[in-house]
Image 1: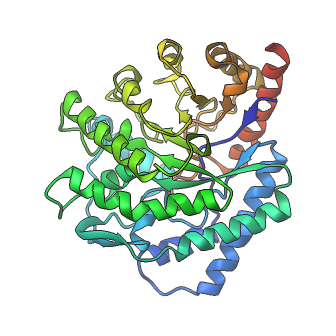
Image 2: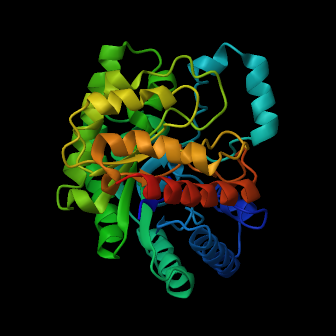
Image 3: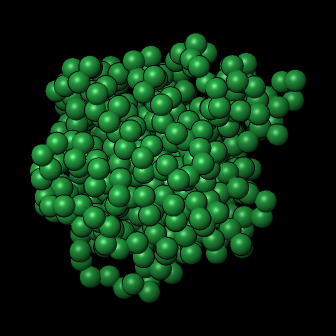
Length: 374
């Protein structure tokens, strides 16, 4: 059976988002209430994923305010708030940017910078995430495989700018040591480790938009080297990585083409690669994967768009699967999503009910493709 999965984050409900944002801002909150609310949300998320036919499920990242900035509660050395540089494509269409903000909500989380030496100080939030996920799997996840997300070293540098270290490489070196215990703990718990790596694509037109392509690729190379060093003790088959160009409905006309970054992406150790393949800016790039050396890699293309509430038909999903199965065989294809359904608390365009329908459509499309591919 062709497996299905998704990128990780699922919509956080109105009960959970305020608690996550309060904790992120250092405001008072009831720790017991927080744990109960997150546990209930993870239970429901696992149940709904299994019900939708998802083969490889996650905890929805529901205990985190966001997929990247959560690290500031686990690592020392971060402080302040640095406003994000507008994405290069949205900067040219300011009225659209305002409309998107009204539709998707505002990104209210803290965007700290590295202002001192970065080191691991508190891994308890991870152990709490693992405990809640394991409990939900025991109750609702019979037969499902499981993965848990973690920020890659390069992603952290992209969202938490360097204001302390003498170089990007020096910053990465401390992040390797700081994040390695998180990565190893996730695998030790029996989950696949997913490294989130939009720094290898999206950052070209966001944080690194002032660099040349060549300069950006040098940064990306350093980021992959750091990821490989941090995961040196983990088998590639136990890891997945996600590469994307930004989970927002903008023009994306400054996205760096896949053909320019694929050589760097393929140097990363994780065996499974999740990437955008459904939205209008990147669906055509399946031909780039066709031309690449994919020895040992499993492709998890995004087959449904996470920026649109249009519901893809199972037949369309099956056709998209067939493209990639023709490249690597159906046993090395996982039907996935372009990005997450809830990358940050209180922020996102996809209606939760539509998210579950999209995941069910993935299963239906995978079943169609499975029946047609020898």
